[in-house]
Image (cartoon, rainbow, N blue to C red; front, side):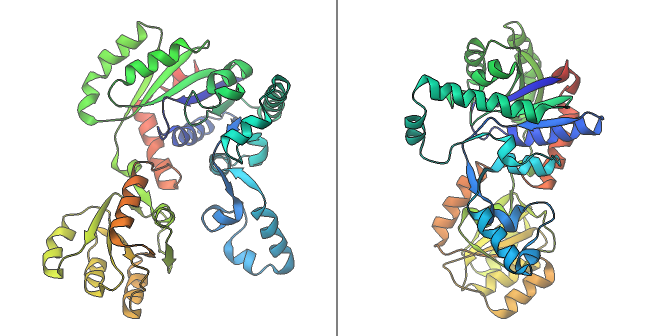
Length: 382
């Protein structure tokens, strides 16, 4: 059995999406693939997420129509915190194990309080034993187990559960995901010095004009004991936000349901001008969301007519007229009602774009294509 720990130089480097896509590729090759996340630091309640990613076989309609048993299930789920990535990957890879089995240690309180519970050596050793026992169960019968690291390779060091601790504990090889930026080579070499296992790197989100340097960078790192197995260029679709992510980022409410659950937004347009001035502005866009006041029905009607506009975010907590709601349903374009002013909504969405995750099926499919084209899968497994 091969154990590959997918780590990262920094947060939001794309390792969860790469794990999902890599897992699907390996399954297509006939391998029995497992997934494990020893230490989860982002917990969610299942009830909160049920509308977006409920358990297999459940739906909102099924819960609503299920009477007392369904109500009890919702209450039980609301009390159960799980790691978000573990929950999603388990569904994507169709794994039998529950999120609690996949992620045995979950940060469900402030880190300082967590450290107070596990500051003694015996308590830390008990944590590590819990990880080893859970891994033994999850990895049974698997050909390859993809182990997801924490936020970055340093997080968890205080309780000896950082990625390099886990690598030694599980005898796992390191596959480092490095989001391309200035001085990323220094970050990689520094990480390599602190790792005792084999060390391979995938560069992610590489600007197109930087791809010309990849041959030199690969040689430079390989001379220093780091094998580069791929470089994935920047891709607008992967940086996009889904309708659900936009709704969550602005604390909004979805009016109606989009006809296509895979709607992705790649750019934001602020509608604060006259419709005459907005026409050219809107038509030049690509897979855009228009952010405008809930009282600007003139701009809302115009935006719904433009094919490139995929979603409308209506600010100020003002509901649009019934005619706008009907037009949105007819065209399959979701409306998101945001409680805050336009400036606040724009600021929140700009931050969300910097932290876009690969949780939608469309993004996973795209990442799979990029892995097959730009990453040497055989080198990862060798």
